[in-house]
Image (cartoon, rainbow, N blue to C red; front, side):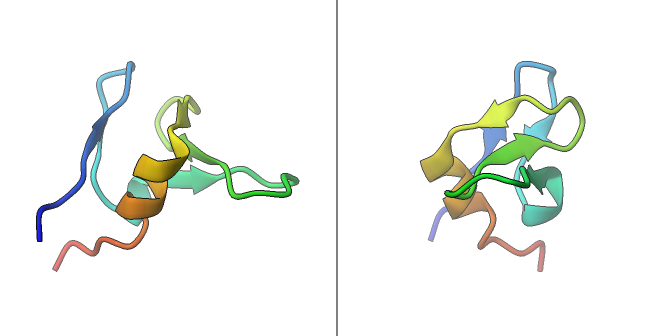
Length: 54
């Protein structure tokens, strides 16, 4: 299985759950870059949040 990665506009490479921050107070899960707070596309974030660095 291939890994999903996302290149944030701030330059951060989002590859694992610890690179994402869940936005609180929303009905549906919404994920942001931990470095800059830029929203990450939902489908991409859902795939990344299930990946582990092992």
